[in-house]
Length: 354
Length: 247
Image (cartoon, rainbow over all chains, first blue to last red; front, side, top):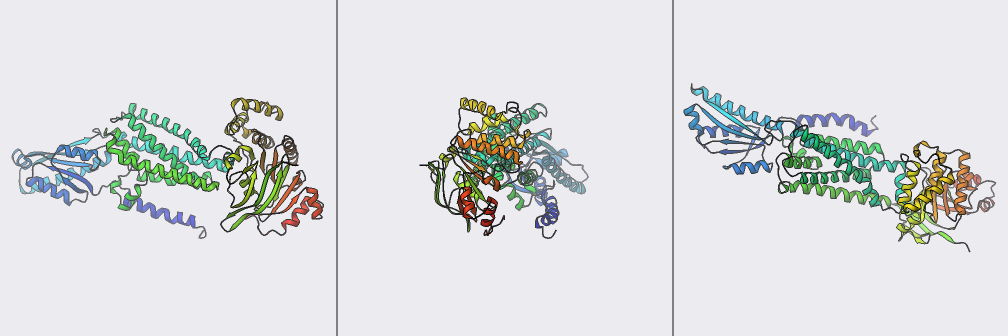
């Protein structure tokens, strides 16, 4: 066993990696979430609550802004997950009518995160309430008014549908392309294709096209089911959504192609696609575990997971109804990845021929 | 005067320090069955890959069907057929689908494909099998079909890389009859093999040892030269000096 380094690595590496991953990275606890505070009151009560939020390890105050337009823009850009608005006369209301309101706005496209974050805020506010009850006998009440943006009913579908889309498309494209090309290598038919006048580039393209169509069909099925069965909205442009999905499919196909050029057996292609693609996609794609909570190292790693970018794009289009101007960066990343994988695989392919 | 179809001069392929094919020179004539023998790892497959435009030679010269392997590999591909030791048809396509597919990638028109496949089915007496998956027909039949498909586009040369691996002697004999028919059509047959009795069927043979061609001639010439009674003996006399083994 000790001569078989790979098995050894697997046996001891697995528990270490898993403990670290699940212990630090993949928790539903949220730390250092960026929060925006709109303090129209600027009085003693609001300042004290803000102080408590600032002291909490759950939040990092991003900035204090004073217009609802700015808050809206921050949500659209995906800069923040939560915002708090203190109305004018917050302290005055509290002291004179014994009750006051604050507005808590959360990005509920990820309902779990939104619920967790609003719970943190509510408990901070309750905590403050307890504090003032100690010093006075009047039962002052602060009532947080919750607003769940994009997904007021906190349905699960808006979160997992984009995730499933990313998963399924990636799986079909990466796994199927890589396996189908490697299979021809294994069987020997690839060699026959290569000695034919048929251009190697065309061999690759014709291998990819069926999976492009299958994936587009899958996309249609997923969209139809989620819209009609799960009542998932498509607030943005359908054409943009399909175009972005096609880009993602092409990225995944090129990735599959890349895997097929570096492996020689179907088994190897399969395990690379499974371990190398499935796990990072699930763990670092952003829809199971919020990426913001992860250690910096993992956050950096998550950037090379194509599904992460696609997930952001799909959520932006379907739930937030945003246009291309908000997602061009993510689009560019995906396009860049596709180009890179295609170039590397074409180069690998040629080297093999030489 | 015999027409030369393949001509190499000091054709060499290096992989780093390893010289897989070491300056081989030979000529193959039109309609000839040219046997290419050698132990595993002697460099047969590499030499064949260079001649079929799959692999770029490191140095030397090679002309196949009047075309230079250095500058016109894509043109060469149109003029050669290829059947590999591993089975080279699509198992999950039917017989007729395979014929159509390979006809297609060699750029035959639909009409040509139709005409060719009818001829081929007739000749092989495959009428009852055309709708069967290649997976379900016997190995001997598959190999005949593979050869027929490899020469569907009437190439000048057909390369057969250990075509008779794993079949029984009777089927091998039938297969060699097909090779003779192919050569009779004027198609040059370039065949590698492990079976030394098959070497006797070739018009001329070359024996590769450690990347070099150590012997070349008709089976009779070689047996006289090495004062051997069979090709087996010739081969063992040569192979004894080999430094490379399987791995």
